[in-house]
Length: 253
Image 1 (spheres, rainbow, N blue to C red):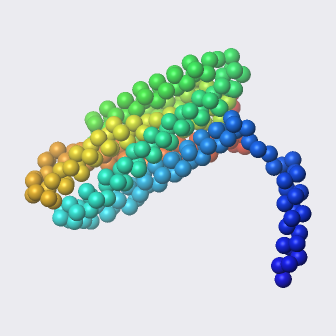
Image 2: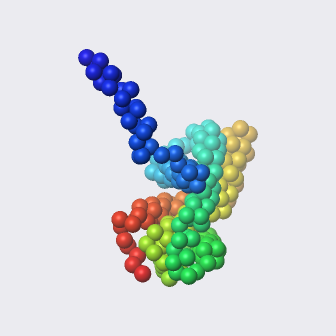
Image 3: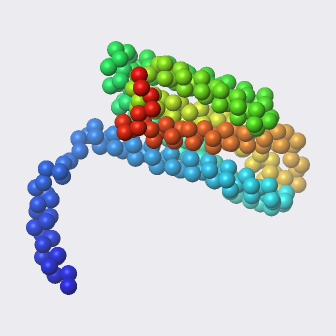
């Protein structure tokens, strides 16, 4: 039954190998493809774990008693947070490299600006905005008030990026990438820094009966606020990555 198609296979392969559409990518194209692939894989890992923590882990932990948490947290969280924090680093660093090499230069040249200067100004803006958000998380305990303040700060950042850059793609990636930098700094500056203390205290309590310090509840609250802020910021970040295509013009300048 398959004899006919199989007999045609050598002729098809010969045509395919001779076709102009089958081209070997250049070294630069291959490097660019690998950067995008690495960015996607690391980003899926990072955001997937972020949503797992917010949608599954937080509600689950509220339902567990102390002894169960003592067994579960030291086993689950170290490995989950390992992939969480390092996938964040890979996502952001690879994304920044791609942004600096393949997106900024063409728009900077068209605008008569320095791509290097643009990149450094953009990075400083993102870091300063994160510093403000860091202070807000440590000063505001009400989630709704914090959300409003973070929204205002990120809108200001977005306006600065729109003023700084030219072109839909550069602006969209500038906003989305800036949010990615902020989210990564939240991971390392708040979530992981406090979670490793909570994990150690929980394990010590389960193994040796050592009382968990009262500070643990305060740190857990800050971890929750930072993680929830990242979850909401990720939606805007992903939207900006999606509209960076030339098919979706949001920023006309």
